[in-house]
Length: 192
Image (cartoon, rainbow, N blue to C red):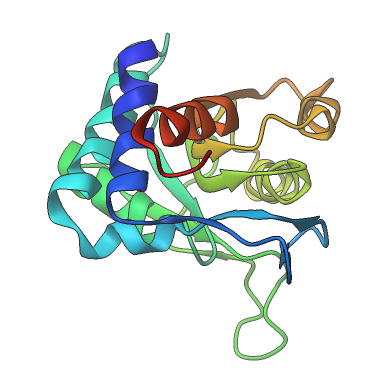
């Protein structure tokens, strides 16, 4: 896994997806102000780098003690990753909104999710973990589906994420993290 983490970190750095700005700092979805930002969305436009991520997720799936019935992506940033992965694996896909829609059918989960299914959720990035756990709870509540794992491209390795996942019965696995991103950026001379 160590090589996979470096490969994903290298892919992100090679397309300049990792940004550093002290003034102004970036504001994450969680509201946290940070001097570092990782724009995983950039990778969907870079075929070789995108494939590194998809292949990484496939390796993680091979190590699971079960075969997921569905690949679920969190809206919006993880939808393409779930779609790429579901297509390669020949699996159905769903996506999960943060809240039910306020119009139309009012759905929070889009797709044709069968009751009792095992769903693997894909996230793009983990900071506090709150939105990921909320997505898993929505899937679990929809037709008594099982969510045992969430995979993400990057984690900021914050203690809040572990706290959010504690007691949920959900394993969080990421392809790379803050330490590897910053360590490799230093090695490459991208930052000092």
